Length: 76
Image 1: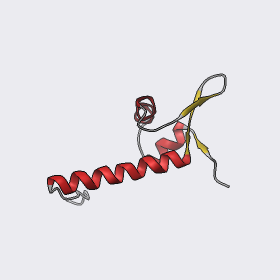
Image 2: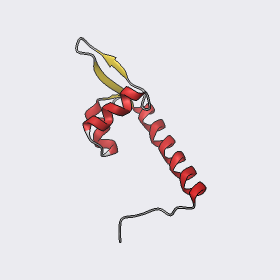
Image 3: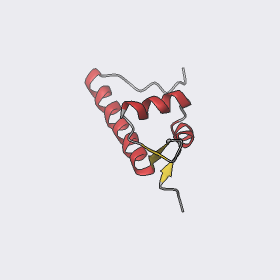
């Protein structure tokens, strides 16, 4: 069974970003999260992470279609 909530370390792994980047996403509200426990540890619901990823895909598609850019696959 997969876990309903993810730690920020899990988020960094899934998105392949740094810990400060994950923290910034949560603090800005761009990635909804809750704080739990006595030490107020951040937790991100797995469904919220999936919604965030979908929003990023939609924003990327919109940006590409509006400016006529092509996707850089890094193979140059």
